[in-house]
Image (cartoon, rainbow, N blue to C red; front, side, top):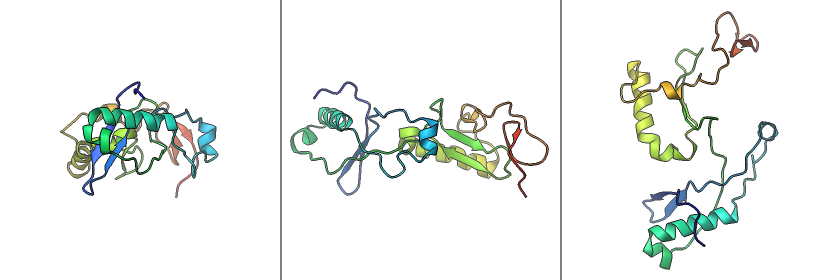
Amino acid sequence: ITPTFLTVEVYPRPDGTIYICGIGGSDYITTSELQSSAFLTNCPPKPDRIDAAKSAFQLMSATYATQGELSHAQACMRPCPPDALPYMGRVPGYRGGYINAGHNCWGIAWAPACGMAMAELVLEGECRCLDLRPFDPARFTVGKGRGGRGRKKGSVSVGEQW
């Protein structure tokens, strides 16, 4: 099988195994499906995506191409905001609240830089190693209007919080 693209992440592990991910190809899950717990307990991998990942890695590794063996395959829901950028920064309206999530399949690769950025923000009050503005957790907040009592989603009250 010839892979249609070679977008894979390869992580050699200390125990000699190799973790390969990032091959994509998931079906779109609607909001209503997520709210009804779709894929909470069963998220099966797609055989064609497994074959594509194996083929892609065989092109990268002569050893795997001739001696490699797939031990298991799995699929999972990946956290991905609508703009495909992670949420990183202060959580609006929550003193001392921070978030660093939604990195899609790149969380493992980006962890050192994101960890450093968040450590600077939490410990020093600002991030100097990168510009966090594109990752603002409030970027999807409608109107960004806050104020008054109670919790709000955008500028719409969702009840008191005591």
